[in-house]
Each structure stands twice: as structure tokens, then as C-alpha cells.
Image 1 (cartoon, rainbow, N blue to C red):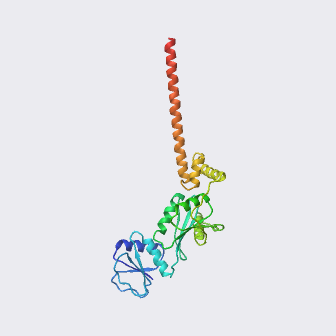
Image 2 (tube, helix red, strand yellow; image 1 turned 180 degrees about the vertical axis):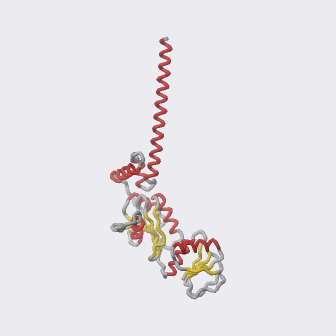
Image 3 (cartoon, one colour; image 1 turned 90 degrees about the vertical axis):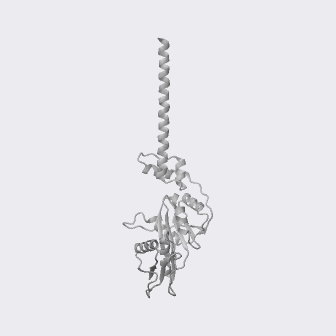
Amino acid sequence: MIVVATADFEVYHGVVTELRDRGVAFTTIEPDDEWPEETDVAVIAAGEAVEIPDGVDLVQADPERPRRAVEAAIAALRGESGRTIVGIDPGERPGVAVVHGEMVVAAFQVPAADAAEVVHREVEDAADPVVRIGDGARLVGSRLVDDLSDVPVELVDETGTTPYLGSGARGMGDVLAAVNIARLEGEEITSRDVEPTAGELQRIKDRSREVSDTNRAIDAELARDVADGTLTIEEALAEHRGDAEDADREERESDGGDDENESETRDDTDSTTG
């Protein structure tokens, strides 16, 4: 059993909330109380002086990262000491799964531009982490490889990693694929240079037209930014709309200037004639 024993209220609140959210059985005691006989893992605040019974695994919790402490406590409770593996199913909104030992300890689905930041945060304190990226969505995947140059990265054949989704499971496919990718060994890779094909750019432009309120597609340059994960389609559409509005404004101003010049010319002509 996990026992939380700390006088640090911030640590107590964060760890207890995480444990409850995960449905993990635990109990709490004051640091100087008698320890339950069934204690397997003790969670205390980092730097806190608490006497722990012999044979009990100790987890010291950072008040800023209660989830990490809970993950470590659960792993210790299960006797797991495996490495931290992050699986990524690349795409416009990549699925990201963090696996420790046999457990999935965290899962995310974020815009492609935010995926590397999420991964860096998840492996920051991990010992010997590895990131496994599916080989689909080549352009987003190549950008992720570059953005994760400080972490060991493996490229994984993602064939068959997306499971069948039954009723009510819509939207979970990318995350579940990321879990499967995390469990497959891949080829270690440090870079992946990929140029978007004309077909890939056209598909992005077609997709932008589908989601646009005005049935307008983004241009090739913005499509390339979407392809490599710099922009989401929504961001590219907003930028495209802004460029179009600027162009319309300039055209109106130009037309207005021409009308004014034409009016002045007519006035001069009328004056000369009179």
C-alpha cells in the first residue's frame, strides 16, 4: 500500500489528488505517526526528514510535480524499474503516450508545434529515456526528430499500430497508436530530411478548404508550414485570412487613389475649358 506521510501541505494536496484521480488505494499519516504494517511505498516531501520503516520504498515528491511522485510510487508498488518510453503517433495533432515499465503513466494529444515541448517535460527527470516516433506523417515526424535532438529517438514502423475503435472511442486512435508505438523497438535516428510532395501539400490545402468558413484554401507556403508542424491548419487559415484582408485593403486604397487622381484630372480639364 502507498502511504503519504508529509507535513508539507502542497505536497500532500497534490499527491493525494493525483492518487484519487487514478483510483489508487492509499492512506495518509502524520510523519511521526505509527506506520501501517501493510506499507509498501512511502511518499514524503523532497528534503523532508521522516523515519521510514525498513523494507519500504521511498518516494520524495517535488511540490511542483506531484504526478511524477505518484508515477514513481505506483511503479515501485508494482515492482517495476523499466525505462521511461515516449511513443508518438505523428500528425496534425500527434498522440503522445508515456510508458514506464508496463504502465501507461500519461497520454496527450496536442498540436504538432507543441509536441516536442510536452516530450521534453515528460523526460526531464527520467533516467535513460527513449522516444519512439511512428514513421507516418513524414513531415511532422522529421521536425520532431530535429526538435528532440537531445533525447535518444527511434523511428518505428507504425504499420498496424492504430487499433479498431468501437462506438464511443472516436478521437482516441492517435493516443492508442502512440501507446503501441512506444512498445515497439525501432531504428535509432538523429535526423530525417523529408521534403513535402506536391500531393501532400495539395491534401493540406484541400483540408484547409474543408474547414474554412469561407471555402478558401491556404496557399502553398502556408501548406508547407502546416506540413512540417510549424502551424496548425486553423493558424494557417487565420494567417491566410489576414493576408487576404491586407491585400483587399491595399487594393481599395489604390482604387481610391486612382479615383481621386481621375477626379482632379477632370476638374483641371473643366477649368481649362471654361
